Length: 168
Image 1 (tube, helix red, strand yellow):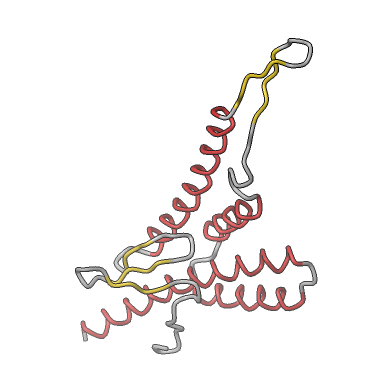
Image 2: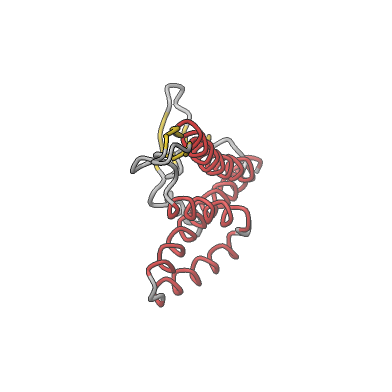
């Protein structure tokens, strides 16, 4: 903790050093962004990564549906078209909801550390009081994304404080 600002990465994010010793942050949505990216650029990269995952799975699902159509002759000689879909094709609806909630949370999260901390406290309380599994799952997703945004916002604050210290 530097001057009252929380510094650890969110639980599911990991710090990784590349061959040039530049710190990169990897988050659960498979995104790597540089510590030199601004808050908005890093958030936009995470949003784009989630949108890309949804689009790829949606496109691959529609391609599978088109490519897996088989022409068959019915009992009476008429031509029927059936679609064969395997057990794991397309995106699981729960994963799609999760990614859409991540996008929505990242887009709408406040960019002020104090507001983020208050919102996180409220969401944590709501999670503790939630009785439905779907509510808990969505709150966990929101909390994790808010923690990512808080990390990015606080990282910029720490960077600004460091620059001010060097100027003096």
